[in-house]
Amino acid sequence: MTEPADLVVVNAEVHTLADPDETYDAFAVRDGRVVRLGTTYDVEFLAGADTETIDADGRVAIPGLIDAHTHLLNSGRSLVHADLSAADSPADAVELLRERAHEIEEDEWVLGFGYDESSWDDSRYLTREDLHEVSETVPVVAFREDMHVAAVNDPVLDRLGDEMPDEDVRTGGGEPTGVIVEKAVDPVYEAIEPDAEEAEELIRAAQATANERGVTMIHDMVRQSKAPQVYRDLDLADELTLRVRINYWVDHFDALVDAGLRTNHGSDMVQVGGVKSYTDGTFGGRTAKLHDPYADDADETGTWVLDPEEIRDLVTRADDHGFQVTLHAIGDAAIDAVLDAYEETDDPGTARYRIEHSELASDEAIERMADMGVVASMQPNFHKWGFEGGLYDARLGERRTDANRLPAYLDAGAPLAFGSDCMPLDPLLGVHYAVNAPSEDQSLDVTEALRAYTAGAAYAGFDKDRLGTLERGKRADFVLLDDSPWERPDRIDEVAVALTAVDGDVVYDGR
Ligand SMILES: [Zn+2]
Image (cartoon, rainbow, N blue to C red; front, side, top):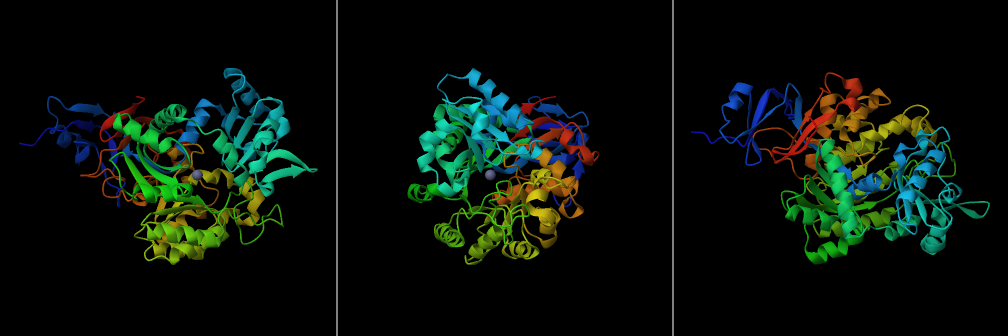
């Protein structure tokens, strides 16, 4: 006699997203794992008196979405502080910051997150003059969406200016404009770092949003924050509703080694990932490191955050201690330098070294990634800047369509994982852009795009055996979608998540 299931999901269009993708009408879950897939009749056979039944009502079921690159605490910040992604002009952003200033204590810092000037008609960075319309006495900070660029007002410059390297503080007529980039942003982060209580508030808000968007696991990038503590506290309290793989910033490296932490060690819900660092900046800030100058600044080729020697040093240290390495590299020069460093290690593929963003990779670089088994951890939502007349057109000119050539990675056989970078935290929006890309050479089909956000991301986190597909024996992390992305490929951004489950437990139900 077969043991009854804990949960059956029936009347669905179940996509396993395995290779090849197979479809079923129903599946059953026991002890958090998928135990059977089949027709509704086959699966209902496993329902006992205590079995929960979800009638999917014809909806599409796919494996839980794994976001391979998040900053969850930051995405919680735009849910709690001023959300500047909603602004469509500098004046609008100022207005949102003013509203936030009214909500908080008089001496509290006014913080806004997520502005994207490339979507504005008045396409310029916010400046200290803008922020002085919010306050000239209380610190005000507006972070650009990429977090590599921020605007600060005089009270911030007065307090923290000494800690900001001159070359990263933008000036006009000898005076700071209030625009700061890269290393000048670091002291600001430190000054506004949430304490444990605020960190928990931010993470709870962001985890709820993630579940609403169908996310069942994140690979989170954490730096000098209380986030790892909060994840483990929530896990111990059984209140964590998404799996978290923590990639620690390189600042923590010695502490990780001293504390005896190991890549891949952890619980079912919280794991230690790799060591993370930037190597360069972004196209938006003209700080991504290029071989040839920017199209809109012939003297600029970008900025090393870690130069090639420092990259080699970091990779060697991580390799010696058996840690996965995950390096942000956007410009072609930065990507080549990271690959040079990875190539010097014994087995970059087994160590599953990653390149975050990997935007302007050459054919040769993509080929090297495939040969070495280096994971390309990419953000298809970045295509939003890649269209004609957009930000990448301005910065890169003709090289615009050389960036984010997603199919080239699959053609070469390089492991491809997708993440959102929380710009915004919305994998289906990313799938939409992957399918509806600026050019043919940058676009995937629906199945390929969804796979990079499921099995591909699972591979990047050493999780292929338990996550990433809806197959027998895998953890029952799944999502029900109101519409089929295969049936409306041009409007995947409008496909709503109806229900999200982790280990067969429903963590979001919007039906
Ligand atoms: Zn990031």
